[in-house]
Length: 170
Image (cartoon, rainbow, N blue to C red; front, side, top):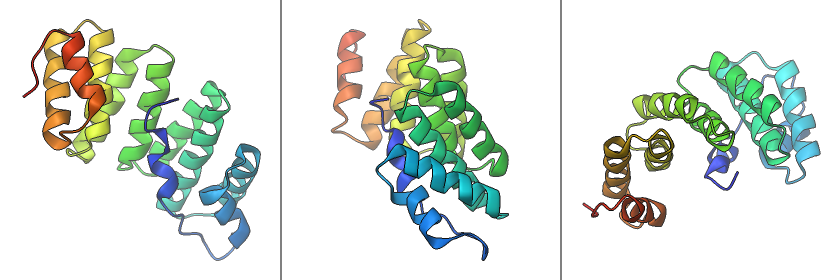
């Protein structure tokens, strides 16, 4: 869970009229995972807006992943994707969970989908490179590490990945 999993927490939920404001605040901002899960669950139960629903599922999934509840996190990330199929952060974060579970094939598919939605998402390129590396796909891994560095030249993990694979930076 040391990857950039928390990108989604900065996205604010647009709640329906019926959702309580403090539940939304808890879902967005609580540092206590129990409080965050409770707030997101309330938002999920009360909102109908697909983007708000997707973000609430995603924030709850992040809290569950922090608690090492990976099966529940995967379920929530999948629900976030079903609520909004263009939520690149949901794909990215679900890919991180798959990577943590040593399921690089599934992780690669999610990182690829995140990149289809947001081609300049350097963390997705970096983590897809890691998934490719786990799959033994050296050239694809090198290409992704280089692409990540092209977007973000100071990305240390990408430079280290290239060194590990015996490749030179772009």
